[in-house]
Length: 493
Ligand SMILES: Cc1cc2nc3c(=O)[nH]c(=O)nc-3n(C[C@H](O)[C@H](O)[C@H](O)COP(=O)(O)OP(=O)(O)OC[C@H]3O[C@@H](n4cnc5c(N)ncnc54)[C@H](O)[C@@H]3O)c2cc1C
Ligand code: FES
Ligand code: FES
Image 1 (cartoon, rainbow, N blue to C red):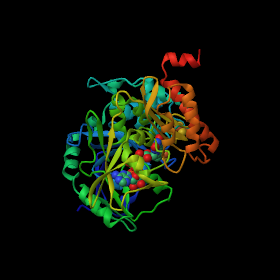
Image 2 (cartoon, rainbow, N blue to C red):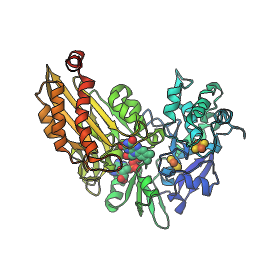
Image 3 (tube, protein in one colour):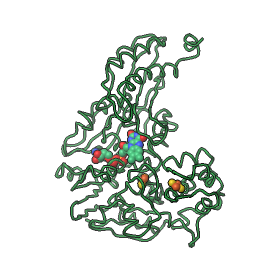
Image 4 (cartoon, rainbow, N blue to C red):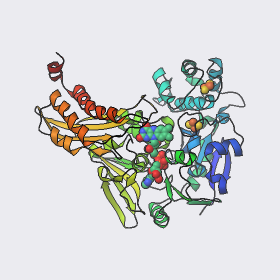
């Protein structure tokens, strides 16, 4: 059993032991390595000032492909050192070429993209990540304005104004951008990581202990012996809670390298998503497979959050406003959990027993999510209502799916989030819709039934009345978005 975290920072090896293994990466960089280019502003993943590159063995094409490193932008304030075994961290300092600013850094200077400078290092790493990933026909391509804006949704600037920052990214000649693989030859890093990736790690600090298992059996064993251990996957929920002092776990288990959990398998009818598959990988996958769910994933958090966070984490966190849940409820998705007695499957819609509480036994962990693909005849719409489109917490979420048999509705499924302590399936509304004619009147009445099935509360994201109104209005919206021209003409002549 290894007793240190092995990682590289800007090409230099570090073996992290003891209490250092329990620090946020941003603190380790700033206070242990004096790499103060990485700034900390919010310490909860919201502003992007601390964005760094995380290089990991590429699992994109399946867990067998480990011949290159995939560099992704993540928020260093919500990545703890114990999550970073066998990774290469590149900070804003590590982007310089022979001591000179790289093309993007220079462009930020030339275009006056920095004033106070707190946000600047994070913007630069996020921009570089766009140039790292923007390829077409195996050649680097020039990102357009939409791609630049998209890549920067996780970065906030409070003083310069975004126009000059976007201009800085758009003025870079992509042929002059030197990729990380050119700055840091991948072969020695890949060979070191391949050698150590599958080694279990246990590190004891003065107050906590963490375990990185590499197979499901030892993960389950550890879990059963330590039922209060906190499981960390992408850490985008857990590490915010750590930073806010809401939890102080003595035992931690990180799932980053458990074999088999990074697989994404598809068949004609079902998608099997391993518990370590990132939201970003799913976003890419669903772009063609199911654009409606892709859109929900695209507006989920920010690129930094999606490159780290997982679907399993979203499910296990169990928030009533978790964005993936309404879709998983109406699609009939199931989680597969592993425990000391073996594996079992539970419908996501039957997983919660109360606010953020799952029906799992103390030894069980989620290993997979099985998602049945909606049939071709299914009409599916997913909704996220929030104050802004990107990087915002939902006030209300919904999934509505149904089929049409002639002018009648069949197989209606409705789930709402943000309207009770857990995401709710609305059986009375479903029953009301089934067999009814597909017209505005039906959806208006269904909205009234839905309002009676929910028990929203008022909080900072919306009042009880606002949420009740949304519950009704979303039904009408569904009608207007899915009705054909003749049906629309009847209500909007
Ligand atoms: C800035 C920011 C923006 C966000 N935006 C959104 C958003 O738009 N929509 C949204 O829904 N959420 C959002 N989130 C919340 C979070 O990113 C998601 O819930 C994410 O899916 C969590 O995944 P993770 O892998 O990071 O989970 P972690 O933080 O690692 O874990 C979350 C919880 O799940 C448990 N867990 C993780 N994996 C397993 C497993 N395999 N078995 C059992 N338990 C497990 C952990 O113990 C923990 O309780 C945001 C968070 C931040 C910080
Ligand atoms: S400091 Fe704001 S995202 Fe990390
Ligand atoms: S330059 Fe000041 S916050 Fe961006």
